[in-house]
Image 1 (cartoon, rainbow, N blue to C red):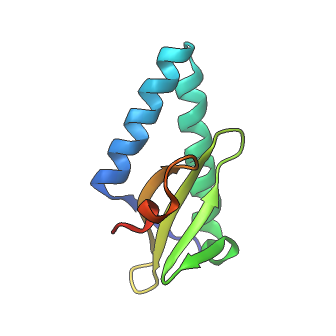
Image 2: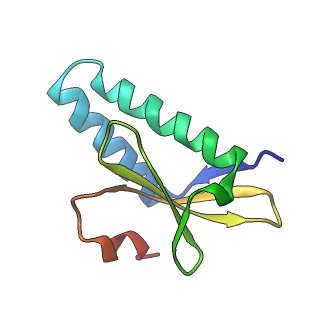
Length: 99
C-alpha cells in the first residue's frame, strides 16, 4: 500500500532554503537536490517502516549525495506521511524533533 505525503510548513521552508542555497552554489544543483528529496519521499511512501525510527514516533530517511534527512511521522489512519523536517545533518540533532 502506497502512502501519500504532506510537507509541514516549516519543512517546506527548509526545503526551499536548501534548494536556493544549492542553486547559488551551482546552476542546476538545487534541482538535483529537490529531485533527490522527491525520490526519497517516493521510497518512504512505498515503505514507510523501512526507515529508522529514531525518537518516539519520528522516522528518518537519509538523502543520497546530500547531507540531509527527511524526518517524518506515519499517519496510518489517513495513509499518509507527514514530513516534519528537511534536516541538515550538521545541525544540532535535538532540533530535528522540535515538533
